[in-house]
Amino acid sequence: MKWKEFSEFYKGKNVLITGHTGFKGSWLSRMLIKAGAVVTGYSLEPPTDPSLFDVTGLSDEMHSVIGDIRDLDHLKKVFEEIKPEIVFHLAAQPIVRDSYKEPVYTYETNVMGTVHILECVRLTPSVKSFLNVTTDKVYENKEWEYGYRESDPLDGYDPYSNSKSCSELVTHSYAKSFFSQGETRISTSRAGNVIGGGDFANDRIIPDCIRAASKKQEIVLRNPHSTRPYQHVLEPLAVYMTIAMKQYEDIKFQGYYNVGPDDRDCVTTGNLADIFCEAWGEGLRWVNRYEGGPHEANFLKLDCSRIKNVFGWAPRYGVKEAVEKTVQWAKAYLEGEDMRKVMDQQIKEFFHE
Image (cartoon, rainbow, N blue to C red; front, side):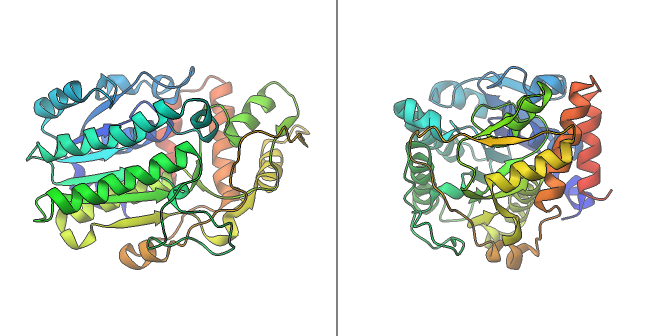
């Protein structure tokens, strides 16, 4: 994936991103803006305060529409007005533990939200490429040691994971029912856990580490033995931009894609906290305080052979580098630096510009 290819393809293209005020949505918006796309975002207000979207002043650089993907009429009006050529669907209720507290809202957002987006795509002839971003948690998790492949059964356990499985199935049905002639190319991408600068969410390991470190407190881990595939946020975003671009140019690239780190970067939460403490310095430590709580998977990883074969993709950063880039961003933020410049510099470094 070369930045030059992105900038040649995306320059002047009308792109709509749902969930643009979130962590991944903000990074993706900035990448698309830098590549020359005309970017519109449709999302709720930023989910955290502070938020990456506000800290980097992204609303100055794009058309930002505040709306709920459960509101089909509003969404239709935006599609009619913008006439997007490419749509990235990232809007979701993304937190596993929150999905136990608010299952109905989680299903309304993650399932009917997907129906609404696809319905708007169906009614908008300008859309040539659609990507639904889901999660590695869509698979029926048997806690086995090998990675899940795109052909494995979908059946997430908790309401978040299950609603994302449903979102996948909705996408598959729409693709077969309404887009079989290839006029719009449809794909989904199932990504592992992402880390990177500007994630201020609750109940995520790295943001929790940064909050503790900034207050000079011990990091509290609730499940240090669970294994997850961790990757820097720019890894899957570069893949999303690649899938949307390649399928726009050739229908043979549409499909379902895992995107995750190599096996060596599937580490336990305890290992991740160790790497973080070393990168942060200042004598930072973590403690194990398991508090019970709802079911969460202990072991989960992806088989990413397909995306490597189809696109010749390979991760740029290992987990250590991903943590180091995140710490670098967090320290710059705490020191009051210009965070849009820091964001742009990290994008540049990632693509070896």
